[in-house]
Image 1 (spheres, rainbow, N blue to C red):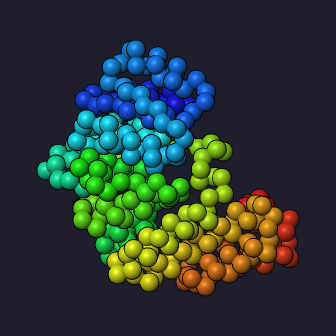
Image 2 (cartoon, rainbow, N blue to C red; image 1 turned 90 degrees about the horizontal axis):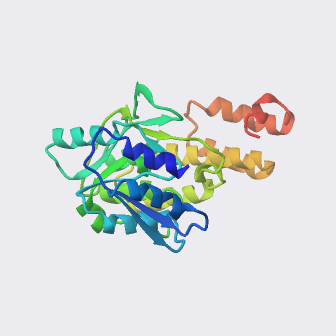
Image 3 (cartoon, one colour; image 1 turned 60 degrees about the vertical axis):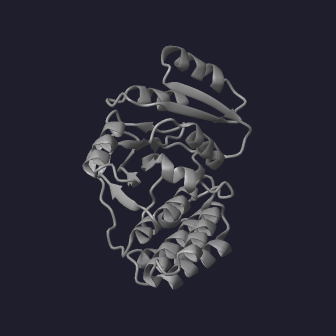
Length: 282
């Protein structure tokens, strides 16, 4: 799918860009494919590293970048043609102030609807804790990313953890146009049972920002995380563990719009395991 990602950059209406492709230890024909693009466009650069996961790949790409503003794109997603142009306009409108900028998200194909954000936050760190802002939605000044790099020990939620550190000293800006397009497929890391690792990252952020995140915000986010784990356990037919995480989810945030649903699911996995309610998560 990497050819789609590359083509989406080539098709940008904003033309003053460089594309640094960091190959994280691939063993297929990735280099040959990228070489074909490089022959046609000298704005593309190829870097190879032994497999160290995506945080290390991004950090290496940051070091090699010549531009002042950096965006990210995974090999299995694409940009809408206006993606870079919208960021260029937003940054200019903000007087080129250094900070963390991000855009809206489209699923599968470009949506002209505007992104709606949960704005019930007290500060920007709370906002990042409440809202999942994936790396490909971001644009950050290089000087910030050279000082505050991706934590290469974190495999899931590394973007949210990085944003929480960046926002301790920098501003947050966003536009609501959904110019990043996430292409759904079964091999996405978020679909591969990584909820426990995500919970660890959330707790790391909490530990580093005790004074910035209110208890009700902490409880709501952890409640959602526990419920996601429970759904994964139901799919794996680990009913007792699934029940444990549903109960944890309820304990952390009983006043939740999904409380009734969680209670019904908890009853159903024992009383009616073949019900449509349970099958929804299998």
